[in-house]
Image (cartoon, rainbow, N blue to C red; front, side, top):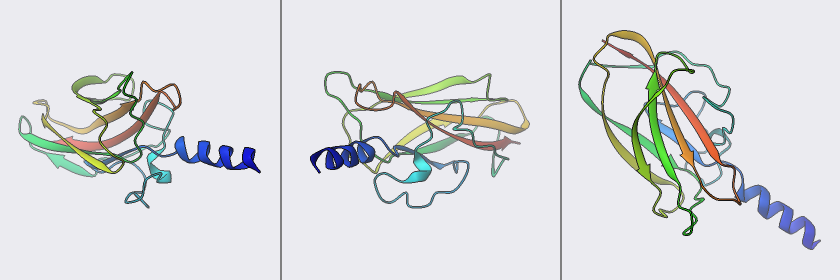
Length: 151
């Protein structure tokens, strides 16, 4: 019985950790108001094996806010992790544009990251957000992607 309880706790501790609220992440956002949401556990890069099409547009060269939710906390004081925001024209050619330190904020915390839209017009950019946990007790990286156009 103790083994079953420990196993169940490990499952909870290793599922669902990063959501991209704005721009809207690929796929659904079901249950994101609870720690451990299934739509926030994408462990395969670069985009969690989800495909997408642009759902929003931004004006070239303007500032906008990226909203990232730490759906489940994996902070380790000895080796704190971080979040990255990257974008590119394909999933294989991303440029990191922002990095945010994980300072032990609780599950469901919303990070606001100010970025400047690319100056090159294109109807399909891909934004990738990662949560690099640096925690040996958790998966190393969680992924989310969103699609947007620049006009």
